[in-house]
Image (tube, rainbow, N blue to C red; front, side, top):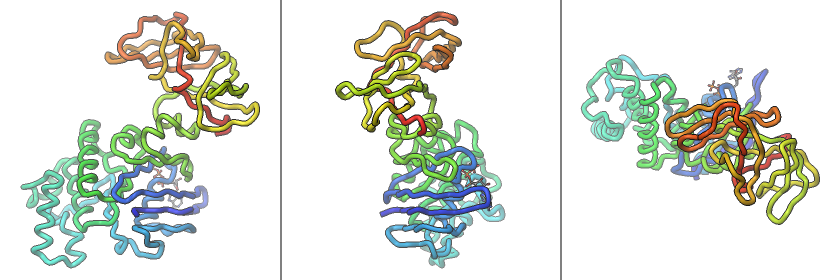
Length: 350
Ligand code: ATP
């Protein structure tokens, strides 16, 4: 059953949250959004630290709105580890077990298991202050998991670590989450991290959920302009629906007429935004039935495995990513092409 947030609201003088989303049992869902969009507040509402002003929170099908934090069976991991500096690694991991009155022998066994799980076997007796940042975060994860929580809540757990460590530890978190099948909510503002570890991503903006879906849905079929622009680079062309021919919508724009396939319905001559990703573009001769327009190369960056080009077409900027080396130079005029199947149409207001 997992977690269900139903119209959960929190009002502050200058900010308001109103969110609904479900996390299936045993899966990892990420709350992704820019700083200040309400991710931490939402997580703290789930944990029970913040009381919502409205809505319902269900954990494994049971309403927990009035259940105090320590009875919600949530394991928490914070950005700054929040370990007890005067305790050993084992002391930290076993803390929740002692609080819950586990018999010593069973608690010791559990701590031993957790040390193995987070690959810190042999570290039990060490002081946590002697550990590296990555090791401290493993201890924090083990401490959160020790009492067998119903739900694991992670708030930007990797943001204090350097880039390489972030990558390896996010893989570890995913491995452990899958091994234990623990329902998990992960908060981050880092889209790569969200894509790398999530079963589902909920994109938040200004206290609201913009879209919830698998990483593939979020990237390939964004429902709003905010989502399209927040996750990865994107190109946009503003235009108006001119009609529909077979399965394809036709869109008139200052750059010409374009065709696009869409599962969304658009009535009349609605203003729309056509969206396509830089890596879905080809340069050069027109491919049959593809959309094509002319642009001038403003900048060309060879990155080894790919080339990133900034192009200008009638005053609008575009980004194109070509695998390998692109044979063109600054100032050159090129044909920019993309398939009607590789773009998304959104209402201009969206
Ligand atoms: P970050 O990634 O920077 O941590 P966030 O997405 O987690 O951001 P929150 O920390 O949830 O965002 O904050 C959302 C908004 O709610 C912010 O504008 C913040 O100022 C406001 N806010 C949070 N707590 C309070 C409070 N106790 N009183 C008033 N406003 C608050």
